[in-house]
Length: 193
Ligand SMILES: Cc1cc2nc3c(=O)[nH]c(=O)nc-3n(C[C@H](O)[C@H](O)[C@H](O)COP(=O)(O)O)c2cc1C
Image (tube, rainbow, N blue to C red; front, side, top):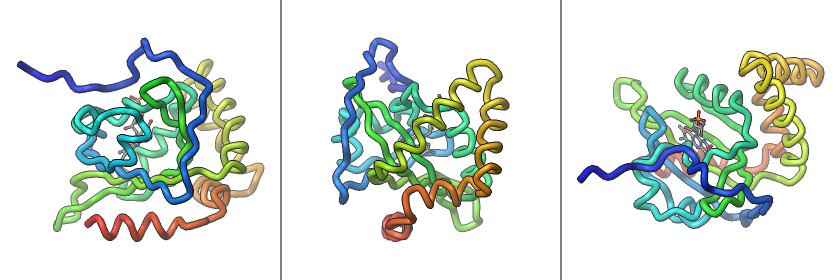
């Protein structure tokens, strides 16, 4: 019998305004194939998301996509990592019971000996409250723009915001997290290889 793997939010999950806050030393790690299907997750991932590891492995990462996330955030993510670059971003994730948690995420491609992408790895930690407070209204603006004009419209909104603040996407995001322990992500990633 074929086992149906989970993907995308089960529409019967009732979205709750219940914020689950990570501890300072919690690190959530996952590895996906090139299509975003989960190959590995650490215990913290399973604990915070509310899913058994056996449900997560093989499921698409969009299983924990929260409806408050703009499409543009994931477009930026995939465009960068497919180009063999790294991604930093703030992500609101959905828990199985409808609650949510915010993370500061770092995602990078993994390469074979010939430099081809074979998988992607993500390391995440607690997002700072000031970063969350800044990003919530921006994500709202992006989602509103997407409702009327799609990702093209939200891309314009984000670019205007970055221009007004004289910054780039990466600089803006890393400064929001105050650059704190970004290097730890790198060390964890190196240890995993
Ligand atoms: C390594 C890796 C980690 C990811 N982590 C998350 C995550 O924590 N939350 C999330 O919503 N999407 C994550 N994504 C992005 C998903 O693959 C997907 O693009 C996103 O959930 C939007 O899904 P949708 O386009 O089907 O709506 C991750 C992707 C990769 C490659």
